[in-house]
Image (cartoon, rainbow, N blue to C red):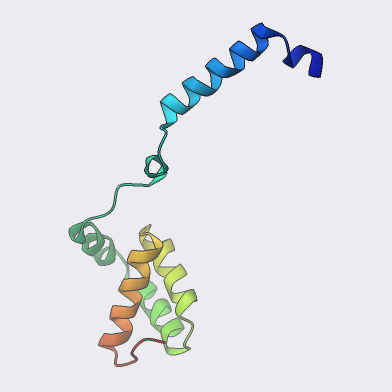
Length: 100
């Protein structure tokens, strides 16, 4: 197997394959990042959450299980971690619970 890898034709094919892969995928670290959501997108996603789902999220907040509340919100909306965390913290502040 190793003898086959040292063959110049195989090495050339591997180099070409990696180059094509990186060209298609992108070179930079930012090439993997999704496009950030606008405030309107976040607000629209939060508006789509049903009352029963908000009740589940509020129950987790009341039980001081912030991570579970964030997970429920992410599942319900498809929001990212940062947006979900900020939304849960805003809901906690609105309910007079503050950050924890």
